[in-house]
Amino acid sequence: MATSAATNIQPLADRVVVKPVEESEQMHGSLYVPDTAKEKPQQGEVVAVGPGKVADNGDRVAPELEVGNRVLYGKYSGTEVTVGGEQYLILRESDVLAVLG
Image (cartoon, rainbow, N blue to C red; front, side, top):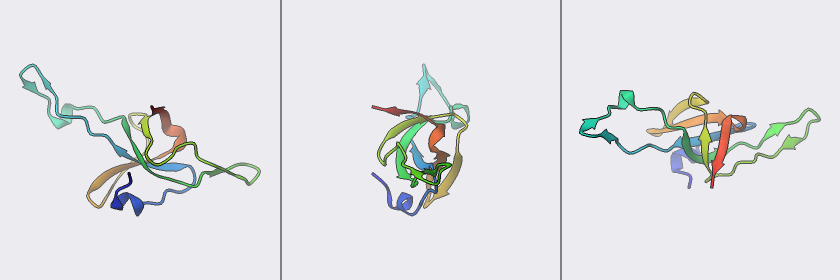
């Protein structure tokens, strides 16, 4: 389910564009956890996929990920970008750790 801003992003080679899933606000007991103390999200939805990387023999290797996949990625992976007021993460397909079922 790509948004209109995400359709403007065309990742190159083996890169993917992920929209991080924001966690709901958390309260521990009667304490509110401020944004600065929250951990960065480590899962999101793939909104755009590049054409794949080029192998040593010159053939293009098709990406394993598809638009709409929910994925887990490393905490400090990729590059954060803002397009149309929305936060996205551009990372290599190899930085994706797993696809959530």
